Image (cartoon, rainbow, N blue to C red; front, side):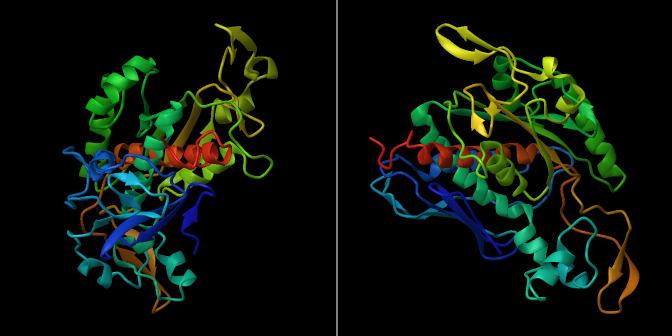
Length: 363
């Protein structure tokens, strides 16, 4: 298995859903960065389930502990390792369904890949629980990116087919964090909430779409041909367990446009080279063009639903039925918003260091 991503700012994920802990090790974080556990905790808290219908009842404190790479309040340049300890696990139900893989989960593929030695409790390495580490890494990356003014923001733009209306950047910054669904459109958010509650009452779940934005990205990030900026961003976003699709700028809608509609015309504004539209999503030829990076991630409905589903009994090699019991989310889109931000931050930080825009020592 491959549990690391990045080159100059590389992160390695470890831990399992019902193991002792989950965490992250960052190799290549510049020395001299002022960093405290509370800096990281602020971002981790944004990932925790809110007090809304449809979120898991698993009540983890997720208290961040930095165990290496910090001295006198600043990073040393050595590997930076952070953990949160798992405390509220209930593994009993997973033993009972060990040989009946849950539809939509990685139970079957993980079992085959590991030769049967995988930790199956709560999905093990394939659980959304491991994304706590992603958010911890993202918190550090965001602090590093502050040195060059890169700002990252993600928000919910769709749940259960209900789409939010486009809002200004000012409205996004004002509304997203006060919305339980991290949606900047209050009217759409109410409809989304009703859809989540309806799905939950019917023993079902819903998915949605998250938009990620990065502002003040310098021109030139990306290493074509194979380490393109959108390619590495997509790879990072696809590492989030529930993501099934990623698009940039106009995305798939570009396939339905003419070139005259899709091309972003260049212009000079206040002495700066800009494009008048951003159908490219801030990336041309795999390289950042100085415009905002815009991506969208499609998040599938959580597969753990209480409805009876068809599966197989691996011991008997026979068809079987399965009813999943336990503490599960009916929609994970709001919780995934800070995870999308984090993986964008990690990727942009890696490329900025590779481009030597960010030095090895911060002063």
